[in-house]
Figure (cartoon, rainbow, N blue to C red):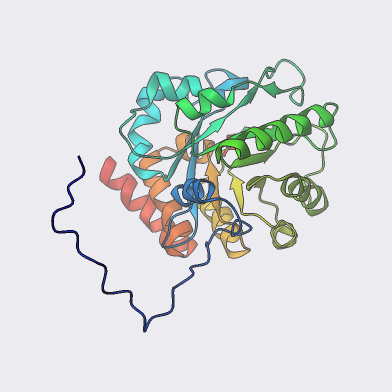
Length: 294
Ligand code: 5RP
């Protein structure tokens, strides 16, 4: 029986204070449901509004690429330094600790390899398994202009619709086929298509000319992929420029896990993304971290 002893009537309704309505700080997400906003708030850090995702999903089409031969040895030590794990369900289940409290952006596409046509993907994870893994977002590639453009966009629509049903946001990754131009026109087109179809986050590549226009034309947060391995200072400069031009963070893989000191590198990337540090300062952080680890 409910305890009805000492039920006290409410007295303090703060009648002199208006009820505060706080705007949700993630771009394009103000009208989303609570669960969706909660998941996005795990991804984008409250202080900076930005995110550092660690991408190590490459094995789903590249196999054991350099730096990803043993996820337990190369990626697990980086877990404390990242905001988000961006990976496949296999990589997550088999090698990542379940008690890290890091949100997961789950790679939910596959079905092709480096030996075949990259744009020919399918949805490779059922929404029930994404929920079972407590994914904070789900993700697939789109290949605008490629042979299987339509199929990749259909995959995105399917993820968005199933994710919406359960309050799970979708990140669209703008995959670039071998013959596609990597320019502002292309990424402006691809990122906008993803957002208009309902993606909650879009991952793009940084480009030297016109990136700020790509960001401006996309009504949801853009995070950048790192792309091929660059010298550490150049990768930090790319991250700095992207943030300066409006990116909401990075989803970086090779430029972190293929670095000669991945912990120092991800720490330096964090300094740029979250603390607004200059490239010089971030590079100092990288060098100091590397010296300490030696
Ligand atoms: C593949 C991906 C990868 O996660 C992405 O390319 C990020 O990794 P990197 O920084 O190594 O480019 O989404 O489609």
